Every structure is written in structure tokens, then in C-alpha cells.
Image (cartoon, rainbow, N blue to C red; front, side):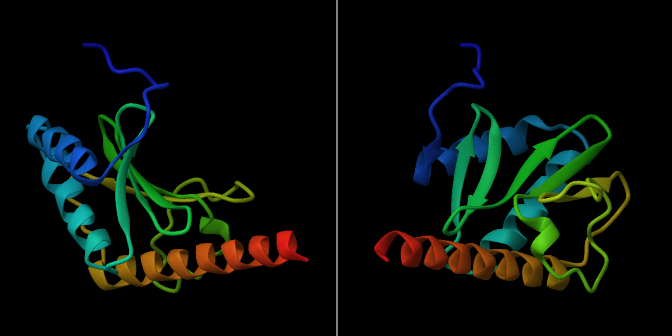
Length: 142
């Protein structure tokens, strides 16, 4: 079966199984890198939900998208939906720096990522999404 970019999103056990399969199918350095960042993201907070969108992309959410985990030939990319609004004291963002909203982290073969800094960024992204959600709720109830 061919995957479609218009496939319905998956959540819960179905999403986790799809991401497990994606990691297992990566027979080079990218599989362990995606597995490690996935573990770091999931352990950053119990409220983080794991989904799969656009037929194939792992997505982690809390009150909206936190980050996506895309796999390319030469890197694993974590794209933060509202990265431009997040603090980055450890300098993790190294991609998509010119955009007005998103920021990304590209992890190339042999590179490691600071797990504590990534988890702090995930928690900051979750807090940012909560604030945006609260502001939208306040606006609609006024």
C-alpha cells in the first residue's frame, strides 16, 4: 500500500507502532538517532502525545504540534512549529533560522544532541502551546 500525504493522522498505539516500524526500517545511523530523540521527547513530559501525520511523519504534540521528526538521507530533522518563539540557550537550532515561526535541529551522522537541552526545549514548546491555547480560549469566550 502506498502512503499518502493526505492519509488521516494516527494517534495512540497505532502511531507508536508506525514510528517503531519506521525506526526499524532505517538500517543505518538514522534509526538510532530517531529512537534516541523520540525517547528524550517522550520522557520530557507525560502530557506529550505521539502522533503520525501526513502518512509518515512522527509528530509530538501538546496543545498543538511541538515538533516533527523527519528523516532525510543525510540528517534527522526536528522541526519545532513555533521554534522562533522558544529560548535556545544551548544553541540547538541550526536550521530554518530565517523563518518567522519555525526553527529546526538537523542531526547529521556522528553528531549527538544535548538531551537535557532538548528536553528543556520540548517543555518550553509545550508551555508556549498552552499559552497560545489559553489566549485563544480567552479570546473566543470574550
